Length: 429
View 1 (cartoon, rainbow, N blue to C red):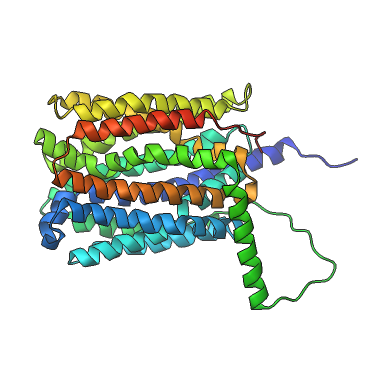
View 2: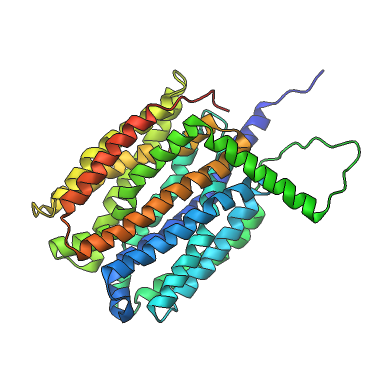
């Protein structure tokens, strides 16, 4: 009698698939906790490190992180696709945690600038590898939900980072203590993660006689693989559309993440702690809940249509558009309630959008190109996000009205909505 997969085997595989998501949840949390807390502690950091000087310099520092993150994202994705997603994730976590700890010990703008730049290199290797590993384990019916749960870690990290302003305001703690604690936590978690995380086994067809290759041969072969992978992705119409769709809303999202605490503090004359929490807690909590709902809805919609994930993501984009108008006009109307309500609406839309990007990518590229593809998406998105951060700092120095800036963001999201509906996904695998 031939053997066949048993219920126990299927249950064991399902448990392993969700265990991977659970193991990566704290990593995602730490990844974005580090990014958000510096935005929440901006006043304290600039107050102590005097040579930062201007909003443009602060924006340039934020942009530098994104630009090096962007450059190294495709590299990290390629390494994860060709070698090991597990080792890429664990190495990235250890490196960025060490740099986080070092950030708490900088003494000048130059040192802070280069610490954040190095942080961009180390963090670039995580997201493409993590989302590709989740997609490897969750083949189909649970993919959007699994990505949504992972993204909840990101939202929890941003929400936690929002409280960093209160820590920075505390005379007994200060802003440096947040970097010390977060860095040490990441270093310690990297050790058990290395032993618990597993790559999906890949079957390799063995050749009858091994072929001896030199280092130069291996280098040429790797270069050929990179060129062929890049060529295939960049000639894929659906992939190009997804890159654009992924990038355009991120222009607004990075400004919201990086600058909203400062915007609320200045516009409504509130404390650094209250501004940090208000700028992150509400919309990230909304995104957290909507990512779960959006993942569930997308997985169910996929039973009826191959475009189910696209439709759910498009609904999210439709919600982001009016949210941008609300955020931009709240200060002029002196309505803190409107600002918070608009951020909540933005969070709901963002959760629907965020939990479906890797699942949509999995429908339009081969499994062995997922991490590389997401790395390229990150490259374009982060490069543009860096320009948005720097540009917002420059525009703040020149007193450009917020409603004008966020009005442009809203129009960009309208274009993004039209783009996603042009994507033609293939059968999920």
